[in-house]
Image (tube, rainbow, N blue to C red; front, side, top):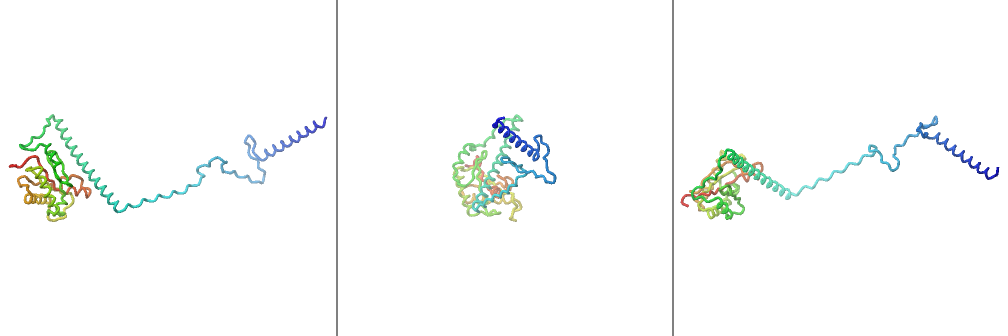
Length: 285
C-alpha cells in the first residue's frame, strides 16, 4: 500500500477514537438524549440545581424583593387666617344662596300644584279683581327701579313691593330699641317710599329667627316682633311724612323664614322688618 494512503487511514482512525472517547464521557457525566436519570458516582453528593434564571429571562414575581414603602406625601400647609376667614364667609354666602333657591323652588312647586288642582277641577283661572284706584302690577314693578336705596334688598312679590331691613341694623340685640343707625335707615327708606309710592298702604311686617329668646321681657317671638313693628310704626308716623292711615302692623314671630335657620348667616337674614307696599292707596290720596 502506498505510504500516503497509510497515513490517511491512520489519521482517520485517530479521529474516530477521539470522537468515541468524548461520547463516552458525555454519557457518564450527563443524562441521555431520551431524558434518562443523571448518573452519579457512588459516594459523591449531587450538585443542587440553580434557581437563577438564565440571562434574558425574568425571575418569578414571588422571588423578587419587596419594593420599599412609598413615603407619604407631606400634608398641605395650613391656610393663613385671612384666607381661612374668606373661605368661611364664601361658604356661608354660598349656603345662604342655596337656601334661598330652595325656598323659591318650594314656592314655585306650591303654586304649580295649586294651578294643577284648579285645572283638574275645570275651574276657570282668572286674575283677582283690583280695588278701585289700585295701581296696576306693571306700574308697581317698573317704579321699583326708582327707589334709591343702595345696600337695601328690594323685590317685587306678586302685586306688592317688599323692602327688607335687617333687624340687627335697626335694634339692639333682643330688644325693640332703635339704634342711631336704624333711625337713619328708616328716615332714608321713608323718604324714598313717599317719593316713589306716595299715599300707598304700607304693611310693617316683623320677623325673628328660631333661636331661643335671651331677653326675659318677651314671653314669645310674637311679642318681640309685635314690639319691634310698633317701634317702627311710632317712628315713621312721628318723624317722617308717612301717615297713620296708610300704615298697619303684622307680627310674624319666627313663622316665615326666607332661608334656613341652620347657619348664623341664615338666622341673621331671617331677623328682619319688611315694609310691604301695596298697590292700593289710602283714603284721601
